[in-house]
Image 1 (cartoon, helix red, strand yellow):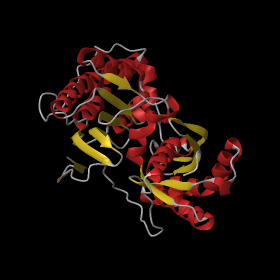
Image 2 (image 1 turned 90 degrees about the vertical axis):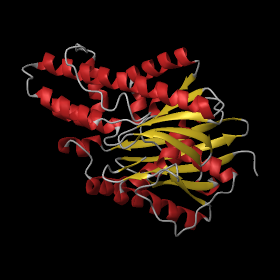
Image 3 (image 1 turned 90 degrees about the horizontal axis):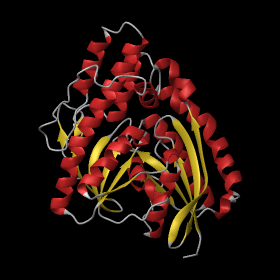
Length: 355
């Protein structure tokens, strides 16, 4: 195997069109040569959420241009790429298909390996660009579509110990921001306006806080925010409700993460917790995780802020790990809109999630 491996990553699972090129340097963390992300925020803002058909159309329009930008920035020739890795799930099927079919075309034309990547595994391994991570470790995955506690035992080896039984945390942030009229995307808006509010003004519920192990629930909290919003009379009321909502989230995360860490300690060696996904960019959530780690003698690891939201560098690093193990995908591989990390996780009927 040659000394320096070059991997291209392609990500189109939702509303970001992204292409990255990374370089493996042996024992050192991989180097990101280019990580180009084209956001569709303006496309979906007026709808208050992602419209799949519009997202897919935007991917089709931009994917080739973004690839050329990544090659130019990295100063890498397309023929020198060793493998093409691309998100194959989970996500919106029309969006996944754009990026993965594009990756198939490149793989076929260049006669280079195709590597199908689970988007969630990308988040799980994203801190490896900067940190010395040792398996096994505890992962808190918090994004717009997923909220899970998992034990990461190695590449492709996951055990889920907790998940949301309804809304994902990112979804709860987005819906609360929409209720309060803050716009889309909701997470950064809530964090911004919460700084102006009184976090003790509204008393909001903490669903299943004292039961269900480290499983979580946010639907009841979202409903409570909607009801409380009916009493809003001015901007300060909005700021107070945003602050109270975020404080309630922090209380839930604090309690459930403590439970998850203790569960991890019972069955696994290690003392690292990685917090990844778009919501991991929230500074207050980072602070509460750091507080827990001080109490539990754990080490907290977060991706760089630009690697928290959807990007292709995290897809490329999974591609690199799989490339080294020769875990390639066939050209007839199909995208998987629902693709769980823990293959043994059970599906909870009626809730739309897997436990």
